Image (cartoon, rainbow, N blue to C red):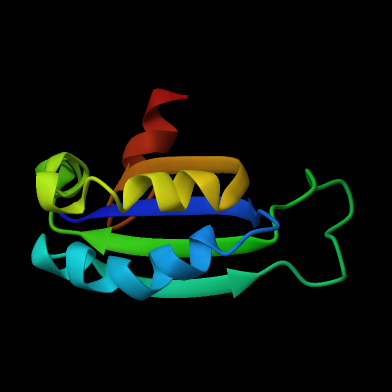
Length: 108
């Protein structure tokens, strides 16, 4: 079942994330990951919303095991510190794909 990794962050004042962004597509693709959306927080905030991070990356993965394999691959061990050092206020969540929200609404 597909999994969506939602990455929200602010960019740090260095070139680490630039280096990460150049090398990560190959690593992500090796494990079936595909970037499906990139975003930048605009100047307008939605009233009442929590302040956003200034960047968004949404990656679709085949499953949770694919994300873990990406993280654990020793060939890319030097890649993850670039992501960590190049960002601030990083939020990263994985969401299982749903066809609709009704199953969640029954739990409430």
